[in-house]
Length: 190
Ligand code: IMP
Image (spheres, rainbow, N blue to C red):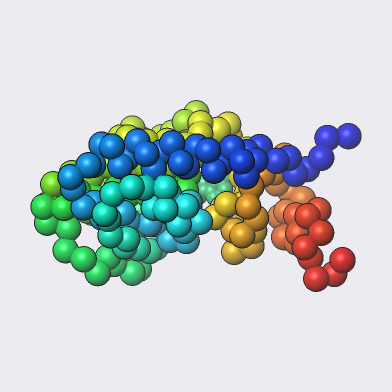
């Protein structure tokens, strides 16, 4: 029987790809001091590794979004502290799925007149895209399974799992949010 939880990207593969992305972004932005904007909370783990793989001076900021309804409408719950006028902004995302979040976020930031806005996403669920969005850098293209670990959560859990896992049957987690913790042997009940 196939397991409900399948590791899809190992720690080693994540590390290698994040290092490549860091080198690529550093080369493209050489001579600039970009503002790396992490979109909370999912991008935190990726961002922490990505900025340490970068070889240029940079700043880190965070943005937290609120979502209303199912049409991807977003608002800002916690804003960036820095003015973005004339700056080179790199939005750091964990995963781009329908693209609705990223499209709205770019619109919100473009009015602040940054010199450029680029997006780096660790994961691209390209087949599920509803709106076209510019993605300058992507770590991995993935299918439409629900993914967990390396920043990605289920009801706030599993962000600290250091590799990336696919959930083959989401009903298992819907019925029992701690099923994956038991699978990993990190549940307090085991
Ligand atoms: P979008 O607006 O549909 O592109 O949604 C992107 C957001 O959906 C991401 O920032 C995640 O918070 C969430 N998301 C989409 N797919 C997954 C997944 O497989 N695991 C965890 N979160 C996901």
